[in-house]
Structure formats: C-alpha cells, structure tokens
Length: 420
Image (cartoon, rainbow, N blue to C red):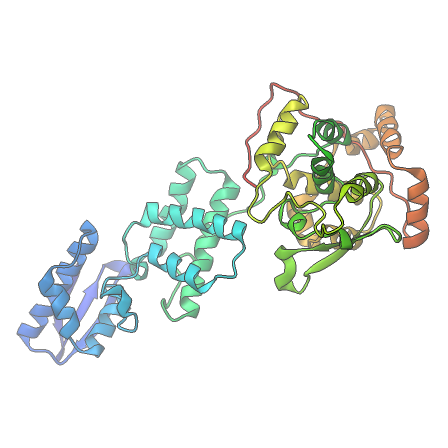
C-alpha cells in the first residue's frame, strides 16, 4: 500500500515496502494537498486491485493535476504517461502492451504472430489488469512457476518467458518502462528433445503412396527430401524456379528474408526429380506456381496427419518440421555442415540445437552391427545412380548415400501433435 509522509520540508509518496519500495518526492505541498494525494492514490490502488474503473472524482483529479505530479505517479506505475492520452489515465497493462507491440509490427509473419498471441494470452491470464510498471521480479518468477504448474513442457515455458522478456525490452526501447522485471528470470532451454523424431525413408514412402495425387506426393517429398519449410516455402515456389537441366531449385524463404537471405538454391535431388517432372508435365500453359493448391494461409497439417494414419503409422510429434530435421541429419552424413545448412536454410547453431538427431544407424555403426550396415547400403540404393553421377559431375560434390533409420511409428503408440 501507499503512504504519504513529510521528510524535511517536502512530502514524499512511497509505494511498497522492503526491496520493492519506490519513493517519489512530491515537492512543496500543503498538508491538505498531501492528504489529497494520499486519498486519490489509495483510490487508484483500490480500483486497480478490484479491476474496476476509477471513481469520477479521482479521474477528474488526475486530469487537473500538474504535469510534474502526473509524471511522478506515472513513474510509479499508478497511471499511464500523459503522452498516451488514448489510455484515459488508466495504467498500461501487459495486455495493452502486447496490443501496442502488434500495432507497431505489421511485418510479423503469420506463424510468428500466432506464437506471440499464445504468449499474450498466458500473460493476461496471469497478470490480469496489473500495471506493467508495477510488475516486480518476484511477479516474473511467480509467472514462470505458474506456467510450470500448468504442466507446460520446459521448452514451452522457456518460450513464454523469453518472449515476455523481449516484449518488455521493446517497451524499454520505446521509453515506456525503465527496467525489465524478467531480466534475471531464466526461461530455460526451448529445445524439447522428446519431440525430435527421425522419419525414415520407409515410413515417408508409405505415406507418399497414400497421397491422393501427384501434387500431394510432391509436397510431402519436398518436406522430406528437399528439407523445405511447409507451407511457407512452397507457397511462392514457381515452375520457373526449377532448373531441370542444371539440377537446381531456387527456394524463396520468407522466414530468413530479414537476415538478407531471401533465397537459397538447393540440388534437384533424385527423389524429387520424377515427382516434379510429373507435376510440370500436367501444368497448364499459363500456370506459374508449382503447387497452386497451396494458397497463402492454407495449413496442410490436418490432411498430412490423415495420410500418415492411412499409411498405418501414428503421426510423429511435429509432422512437417521433423521432416526437415530428418533431412538435415541425413545429409550431414555426407556433406560438410556449412553446405547442408546452406541447403536447408538455417545456421549451424540452430541446426545443432533444434535439428540434428542421433539415429538407430548411428548406434548400429558404433557397435559394428551387420544389420545396420546392410540398412545403410540398402537405403543408398534408393537414389538413381545415373542421376547421382550427373549431380556429382555438375557440383563437384561427393555422392551421398542417404541413410535409412528404420523407426516408423506403429499404430498403437502415441505422440503429441504440433500445430505447423
């Protein structure tokens, strides 16, 4: 609670106790003036605690006080700065802070915005109408413990905490806050090892066989053998991006364009060539996009899950991202990491933290299992030898015998689903 007391020749307004105490000198006030400040500050605190509107008399008083006194109340988190009249004198809550952030960031991608919206909902659920300026480091730690009690995974908890910290740092940059209560609150790792999954060639071929048409077969193959982000990197993929003669595909990447990497070129892998040729052959003369059924905003997640189940498998934890992860792990058996990261479109740091996996074949090789060597040899034969020789001659890179880790999920086991 607040208190107003005289110190020397001036009156002082204090909020909180102990380390959380905040003090502002009110300047030259009469005794009655100090009592008026104490009364209205108490009204503001009561209204905030009860999450109700301010009494009319207090709202009027806030409108009439000097800018200097109002600024001192704002610095204590009791009211919003007068520079933001749209708040009507009501303190800025964390929900309002998120809304202001979104209004300034129309450039956010759809999936980034969706993830941030989830964090906003958790913040509002916990902090409710508490003014942002009044949130303490203890509140921030309580927020993290609350998320853990809600049974969110460690990676999800880390994501919520880290994104909230970033929001408050943004508020500091814009002069809305002076300190970040989340500064020393550790979010933890956002890597969830339990959701990594190696999708074997045997498993994905079973799913491709269940695809309803050539376009869907190619979409799945682009995820597993091309390592593309689905659907964002398929929406803009054009027929003109396919160089059949040189064996190249140019991929436009919305996710990395802000880092100056709007495009990357990947090999036209032998697993993709016949599927791409079949789709191009059926395309109309005026068709520009390779897969026109993938429209902006369309999410192929649900249909892909159905196809996995029709193949007699249980969906792996992250149905599309696990394909990219598998492909990057597979390619690193035969190519340097900087080359693979260039093709997949991520950094070595991200690859090591979120993508690379230990496969069953790694264990087989380590213990000298003949079965493991046979599986590796068998999967190497899946690719066209003629095409691989051509690709080797063009790129001066060694031929890669893609490994087949046999870990398809049988019906009956269960894994959490992930929204892509």
